[in-house]
Image (tube, rainbow, N blue to C red):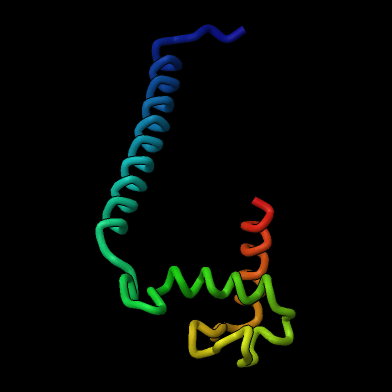
Length: 106
């Protein structure tokens, strides 16, 4: 077998230290980014009746889950396009539908 030398131990120790440092740095950076983002408002925050981007995403999930796909982009009594009507391509609408279904199952 191979004998362990001081150099082998030092290489392993340095590798563990570097991985630990990288993990700690990544976690600290993620927490700082989250803190910086959360200190500011969002588009339309507190502006009734539409209340901004969060409400738009919530409403798009509601529309896509509760209406057939052929009515997602059609103005009607169940889909007021003036109130956060879907204005993204169908792929985005299907993503809203999938997330909405996931939320319903939750």
